[in-house]
Length: 195
Image (cartoon, rainbow, N blue to C red):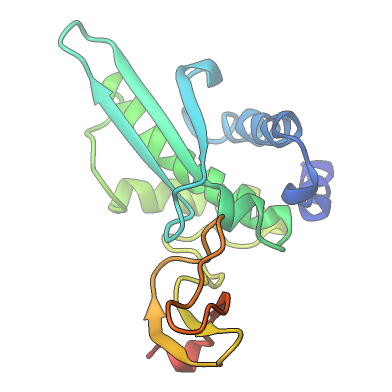
C-alpha cells in the first residue's frame, strides 16, 4: 500500500498517456476492492471528459428492465489530468466516485439499501477508506483544490475589459475584439475577485 501511495504522489497526470493513467486507476481500484465491496473493474465504464470543467468527476448508474446494470464514472480532463497538480487529486476523486459505485453495487446485490448522494452509508465507507489510504490525505465529500472557473476577459491590444467574469475558459480558437482587432485574453480570477 505504501508503494502505491508513493506512486500516486509522484504521478503527474498531464505527462502520462491514457494507458498509464488507467493503469494507476486500476491499481487503486484493486486496493480499494480489498476494503469496500466493488463490482469487477470491467463492469465500471470510465470516461475522461474534456467538457467537464466545474466538477472533478461524477458517477451515473442505471438499472434496465432486464435486470442489467450500467455504471459509469466520468472524470474531468481539465481539472484532474491537465491541471498542474499531483496524482493525489486524481486518486482522491477516483476513490470518491468508487464509493458511489460501491453503494450502488451493494444495493443491486441486496447488501444494503441504496442512497443517492453522500448519506450515512457513503460517509461510513469514506471513513473506512480514509483509514487505509492515510498517506494520501483525506478523501472528502467535496474537493479542496481550487477550480479556475471564473475568468476576466480583456483585449490584448486596447486593454479594454470586456466582461468581468465568465464561467468558461479560453476556447481552442482565438477570439478577437470586434472594435480594435486585438486578441482576447482570458485570465483566471483570484478568490477575492470571484465574489
